[in-house]
Structures are given as C-alpha cells and as structure tokens.
Image 1 (spheres, rainbow, N blue to C red):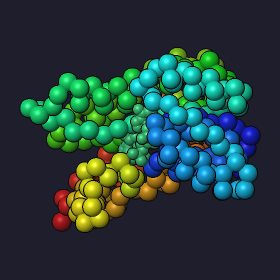
Image 2 (image 1 turned 120 degrees about the vertical axis):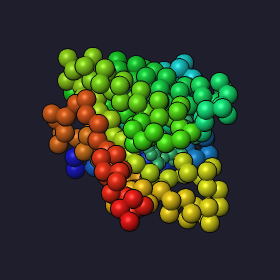
Image 3 (image 1 turned 30 degrees about the vertical axis):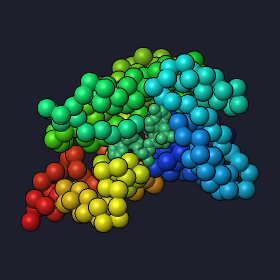
Image 4 (image 1 turned 90 degrees about the vertical axis):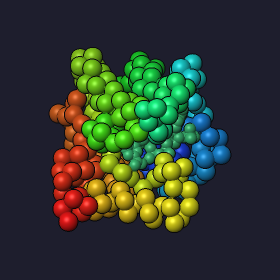
Length: 262
Ligand code: NDP
C-alpha cells in the first residue's frame, strides 16, 4: 500500500476522475475527503467509497470551489476530521464553450472562476494544514496546448493551472511539499454529458475524439487516478513542478492520431 495512513482531500470527488482517484487512494490505504456542490452525488459517492472495504475511510463535504469562504470552511472541516493533510488533489473543474463572437462575459468568467480562482484558493486554504512533505496535484488538460476552436476560456484556464503549479512548487519547496500537474486527454467521464446527451451522440463524439488520439481511444478515469496515486506517493519523491500528460499521445504526437495517419 503506497498511501498507508495518509490523508487526502479531493475537490470534485463525487464524479469522474475525482471519484476514481478517491477509490484508488483508499485502495492504497489513505483516508479521503471529497468535495463537490451536489449533495446527492456526494452521498452516493460516499456510499460507494464506504462499501469498498466495509468500513468508511471517506468523508464528504459540500462546498462550491468558487465560494472562497465555503472552501476555507470545507478545508477546516477536513483538517478537524483528519488532522494534517498529506495529499491535495485540486481536481474540480468545468468545461464551457467560449467561441469568439458568441461568448458572454459571464460564460467566460464562470470557467476561469472555477478552474483558476477556485484552484488557487483551494491550495491557499489547504496550505496551512498540509504536512511538510505533502503532495499537491492540480488537474490540467491537453486543451491548454491544442488550440481547439471555441475553447479560449477553458484552454486559458488549464494553461493557468500549469503556470500556477510551477509557482506553487517554488513557494512550497521549502516545506518539501511537491506540486505537480496531471493533464488528461479526452477521458470518459460525465464531463461530456452536456455536449453528447444521448447514447448515440456519445458514440459519435467518442469516434471523433478517438480519431485525434494516437492510441485511438479515450482514456478512462482510472488511468488518470493511477497517475495521481503515483504523484501522491513516495515513488514520486523527487518530482515537483512537472506536468504529466495522460492522453494516449494527444499532446506529444498529434499527427499520430488515426484521423491524420490515414
Ligand atoms: P466530471 O464532470 O465528472 O467531474 C467534475 C467534478 O468537479 C465534479 O465532481 C463536480 O462536482 C466538481 N465541480 C465542478 N465545479 C465545481 C465547483 N464550483 N465546486 C466544487 N466542485 C465542482 O468531470 P471530470 O472528472 O472529467 O473532470 C475532472 C477534472 O478533469 C476537471 O478539472 C476537468 O477539467 C479535467 N479534465 C477532464 C478531461 C476529460 O476528458 N474528462 C480532460 C482533461 C481535463 P459538483 O457538480 O457536485 O460540483
């Protein structure tokens, strides 16, 4: 067990990559606190996490990452329950189309508020409670690199995540706290539900996305989770300020995707 007796806080732990990571952390021996806005999915996630090994090694705290006071309260509640925090996975994030010519200020700022401001203030709130030697992982995205049409706010937000991670890594190095970014490519989670609301639309979307991925398929949330476990563990003891892409080659080898290689 690589995370035995460690404590972890995962924002957006009630769905997709966050929930898969919560499961992986518990399987490696950690106690996990998850946050999210939706009480019903938090409760459902807690049930799933508790039934993993009979006893519950998880708590759920409802908190909106864009509400700084609520984030500070949530972190304080986790610190009260766990004592010090060893692992922080700032994972909560939202997509959002922001094409030139069709974007309101509100839509643009909503993405930045969750994906950038929310992440910064989550780390700031957690910092006093982190153990020396803790591991902080931020969730980035290949979209920071892709130049995909209509993605200005989202791409900017994930480029900002990478930039912030580097600054945070330098600020927290004196406490031996490592800060890294995991950057997924297209990964099968509920994040795609809005853009592909039916089963048929999902098949079409996955086909289109897979055509741009050298390994020819979407990633699974568990594949991101395994990388986050690695970054959280002592196996990554000399890795800080890094960005690890878990994207089937999307970022590094875009011309290798089935659509372009023919
Ligand atoms: P999901 O939609 O499944 O999960 C998103 C999570 O974030 C949910 O738990 C949601 O909980 C939480 N969340 C969103 N907004 C807030 C908020 N304001 N406050 C608190 N929690 C919030 O998507 P994924 O698991 O796919 O996404 C997780 C991260 O991975 C995101 O940062 C995303 O940008 C990133 N990512 C995903 C990729 C993919 O293809 N799936 C690719 C690249 C990056 P709730 O609704 O209860 O608030």
